[in-house]
Amino acid sequence: MHLREVRLVSGLVLGAFLLTHFGNHALGLVSVEAMERARQIFNLVWRNPLGTILLYGSLVLHFALSLEALFRRRTLRMPLKEAAQLAFGLSLPFLLIPHVVGTRIEFALTGRDSAYPEVVRGLWLVAPDNGVRQAVALVLAWLHGCLGIYFWLRTKRWFPGWAIPLYTGAVLVPVLALLGFAEAGKEIASEPGRFPPASQPPVGADLLGEIRAYLYGGFTVLILLALAARGIRSYRTMARRVRVTYPGAKVVTIPRGFSVLEGSRMAGIPHQAVCGGRGRCSTCRVRILHGSEAQPAATAQELATLKRIKAGPDIRLACQLRPTHDLSVVPILSVGRARLMDVMIGHSTTGGRERDLAVLFCDLRGFTRLTEHRLPFDTVFILNRYFEVVGHAVENSGGFLDKFIGDGALALFGLTAAPEEAARQSFDAALRIIEGVERLNQAYASELDQPLRVVVALHAGPAVVGEMGYGQAVGLTAVGDTLNAASRLETMAKELGADIVMSVEVAHRARLDLAGHEQQTVTVRGRAAPIDAWIVYQARDLMRTPERSPSGTS
Ligand code: FES
Image (cartoon, rainbow, N blue to C red; front, side, top):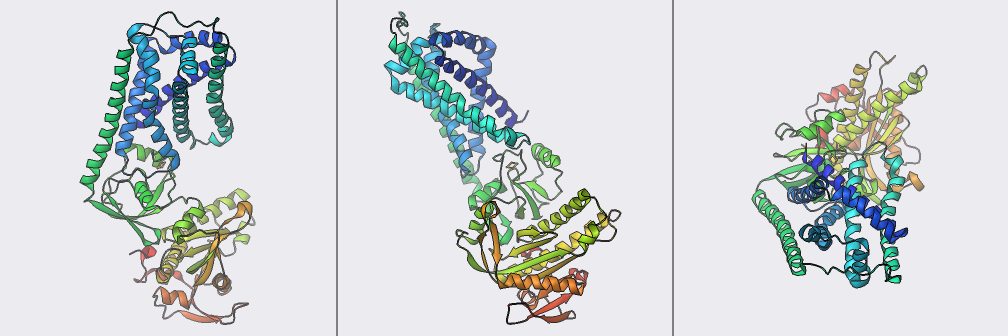
C-alpha cells in the first residue's frame, strides 16, 4: 500500500469517527436522553479493542503522515486550500488534547465514563470557553477531513454531479451537531433537577493535567523536529541546483530535490495541480522538450497515472518529477487565462496593453468539402486530432493559443518573449503544425479521401492585448492592424496554394534567409501601407534549413 493510500484509509476512519460523533451531538435536537442512548452505541463501536486500535492507530498514522508531508514538501508555497488542510491537520492535536484527555484517557485510567449531561454541563455551563474551544476543534477537524475528501474525489468523473449534495452534507453535519449540543446545554441548564451533577468527583486532576502537558510538549517537539529536518535538508541541497526552462524562455533555478511543480510555485508560474501534488489527477503534466534522458525514472505511482491517461514518452507529472539535471518543460493544461496573463505580461489584463507580437493564423484548406460525405462523429474526430497538433505546436514553441475559429486557429507569440524571439517561435510553430498535419495524413491515410492541407500565415507588429468579451465568453486575446494583416496573409496563402505566407517583418526578426522564395506585395483593406510577404510554397524546404531553432529556446 502506498503512503497516500495509508493516509486516505486512516483519514476515512477518522472521518467516520467524526461523523458518528457529530451525529451523536445532533441528537441533542431531540433530547439529552436520545443523545445518551446513542452514545452507548457509539461507545460500543469505538471503545471496543478493535475500534480503539483502529481509531487511535489511524490518529497516530495520520499525524505521522502529516509530518512526513511537511518534511517532504520542498517549499511551503502552496494554494490556499492545501495550506488550510495542512494547518488544520497540524493544529488539531493541540485543540483536541483537552477533549481526549478529559474523556478517553480519563476513562482508560479510572474507568470513569462521563455521560452526556455531565460533559455538556461542563462545557456549556461551567467552562464555556472550553466549550468554544472544543467546538472550534471539531469544526477544524471536520474541515480538514472535508478538504482531504475533496482533493481525493474532485478528479472523479461523477464528482461534479454530486458536488452540491456533498457540499450541503459537509455544511449540515457540523451545524446540526453544534445546534444539538447547544440545545442539550439549554435543556440541562433549564432543568437542573432532571440532570443532577455526578456524585462521583473528577479523579486524578493533577495526573490528567500532567498528561495534557506531556502531550502538548510531545506534539510541539515532533512538529519542530520535522521543520528542523526540512531546514537541514534545504541547507544541504541549496548548493546543488538545476535550471527549469518554461515557455517564453523563462528560467527558474531550483534546488535539486524540488519537483517541477514546486519550481513553478516558487516562481509564481501558474500551474494546474487539481489533486494538490499527490500524483493522482495528471493535471500538472508537462511535456519535456529537452533534458528528459538525464532525469530520474518515473515512480510506480507516476507511471500508473501516466499510463491511465495514455501519456506519450515525453510527458511527466510535474508534481512527481524531481529533476536532477537542467530541462525545459511546457505545462500542458493552462490555468485560468487571466492569471496566466497576469504572469505573462505582468499586470491586470482587463485594461489592455500594447505589445509587439508575432501572430500566427492557420486554416485547413478545403475542409468543408472533406466533410461532405462524412459522419459528424468522424469530422469531429479528425478536427480534434488537428486541434491537438496545433495546440501542441504552439505550446511547445512557447506561444499562446488564442482561439480556434472553425477549422482555423490564432496564436500569439511575444507576451513575454522579446520580438525577435517571438518571431522565431511563431516560425517554429508554423513548421511544427505543418509537420504534425503531415503525420496526421500518414496516420489516417486510409480514412481520408484526400490529405489534409494546412496553410499558415505569420506577421509581426504591435497589437492591443487584454481580456475581451462578454459574460462567459471573456478571454485573453489581441486586436489591431497586425492581426488584420496576418488574416489577410492567410487568405493570400489559400489563394496561392502556399504552405506559409509570412511578412518580411517576421522573416527579418527571426533572421530567416528566404532567398530563392517568391516575394509579393499585398494590400490590406483599411491599411495605408502594403505589406511585403514571402511566399513559401513547400514548407518542407524550410524544414531542412539549419537555422531553424527548436521552440526558440536554444
Ligand atoms: S498535481 Fe495531480 S498529478 Fe500532479
